[in-house]
Length: 302
Image (cartoon, rainbow, N blue to C red; front, side):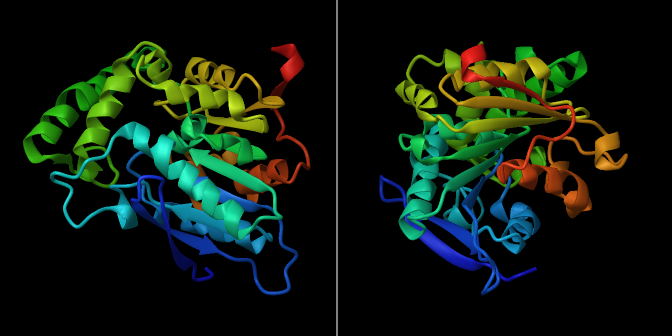
């Protein structure tokens, strides 16, 4: 892997975020600048190999940690104030502004994983995005989950163990859900959104939802068939919120398409899929066509 360069940039409230930038080799034809937006509790280092792959193909690629996560976390999370919404309202816009300021003449593409796939809808500058790939992202109302047993697991974690731990320790240890530590306010608001009918779209004190209408780029939603956290209904509900997107595409990835290896909620970013799923995603980002089995609608059809 090419060693990335560490970058820092401030959010609108002054909080400094830390990211990394992966640059194409000197002399490589440089394509669009690409930002990877992380899933909840997943540090940016998880996306390093995929970011490096994009850089190898001529794309300057930026990863970053939301406030309270990874390299953007304070020394101690107890007492640290952050909300789930802050990542979309403050941190994602800061990353978009950084990319546009440093690469003013390049198209800006966004690849969002889970939270990163819907957080752009809360960003006041979402209009900067010219193409968006949303991987394993949905309206995460637990009622949309198809599996009853999985719904019970989510309920036990997000409505029971998570909030109790947050209130007791002042943060949620990442080992509870397989990620990194979460700030208390993030965990509690995440729980509230998942419990709310229609997820964040049922939250009444979130005026920033209006920015979903500002994203006018083509969007591709990628759902893994074996991702038990994700449902077709939840993904489609999220897609309808981007009602001014020029085009909405849905790519449902089967186990066979990934070479018979389990994929799940996190697996897309494993380098096992470099020659299969990564290649197809890059082709779509480069406007070279949609993966086989992709469904598509234009704005005129919605």
